[in-house]
Length: 307
Image (cartoon, rainbow, N blue to C red; front, side):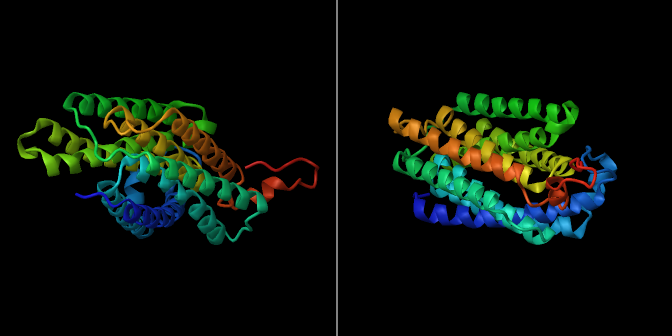
């Protein structure tokens, strides 16, 4: 398929809006189902979640966002498409504030601005140095994909057994690594279909199987993230770690770093740092938790309330 980077950017922005709405809707549904907030969902609770009509509506929106993003990946390099998805973070902040009827402070607006600015800068540099086509190597595709799943599995283990304060972040990071790597896998599959006899290729079917397995695993891990913390942390982590994983896969496995100079790499790292700092601030001062205002205010005894 011929590249069309401007259209890919538009599709990715629309996908970020759909995914932001889906995350808030699903977080509310998971919170209403979990027996105890902040803990891992049991198998019974997971089954209850997937039968929740509100959660299913969020799943449908997630599907719309995924289709838009996959289409964008067929039109532009991973290094262009993946970073733009971080725009879902400010959208989620705005939606969570509206759902929970909490004000958006100047700090939150500033953090959202940093996220958008950093992401825009990263995408601009990536667009300016994008490789025209991926370079496919069957061995690298298999090894790189398995390596991505290995990193994700380690993070999921930390989400299940690590310190409570880090579990939401770990679950979300596990899903982010899978989604980031799979954005590159989708790109490889599209190029396979366009240029190679894919029906008889074991590598092609391995990539297809990895997409299916990744969607299932990442979906479960995201719900565990929702059960362990606020939607803003989940979305923030997905859209901060996801682009890093996507760009790493694109550069290491698909050869998309061929046109990236040292100066461009430094600019991309700087923009990524700005965007990441914005995500950290958004996660720290998120409006999605209705108790946030309570935490910020001292109790009558002079101590800060805890939740």
